[in-house]
Length: 240
View 1 (tube, rainbow, N blue to C red):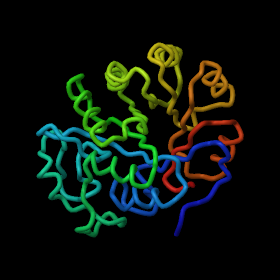
View 2: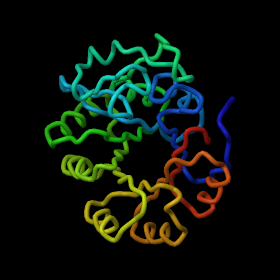
View 3: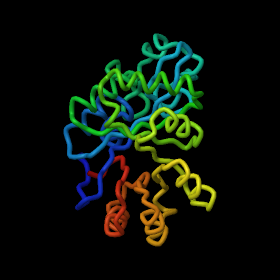
View 4: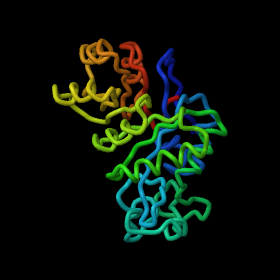
């Protein structure tokens, strides 16, 4: 099995949680798989830990990726989370090689393979936590290659306070006038569920100077339509 190639032209392809149809999502393996391919960027999810660190995990707990009752990162220390063995792609078999990466490790892999980071903020972060996260990335020397995304609008507002020129994308489904105006106010770009995007809406975003990312597109027919419309990014588990 390999990625599905699409003629994406100037549309930039983003590997969702790494290439998560080939390797376990949000792991070194998934990130390296994207690093070894032509993707423009690698998307992942970051959460805070009880002792003030940053861990890579999509869900609210580790249950789905590791089995058992699961641990909630916000209630667990980094050391506790690092001890967890994740299940393989079958979702059942523990694989000692699969562990939860830290934010720093994700950044280092993207840097090694010259990939852009698309970092989804999953935890509600206050300004102090946001600043610590930013400084963590800055210490790796890669802040200029990071696009921050989130369904949590206030998290992005906090990032904007510290980084006036950083690329930010707000995640959403159907667009409302309120969302559109907020995007303009805070100079954010768009990360929209692809089924809620129309060609007319895309043009409206572009006319307002906003770049448009579509999540999560795994059908090459859908991708080709969006590419022909002129979307700026496509986020996918398998397309390249």
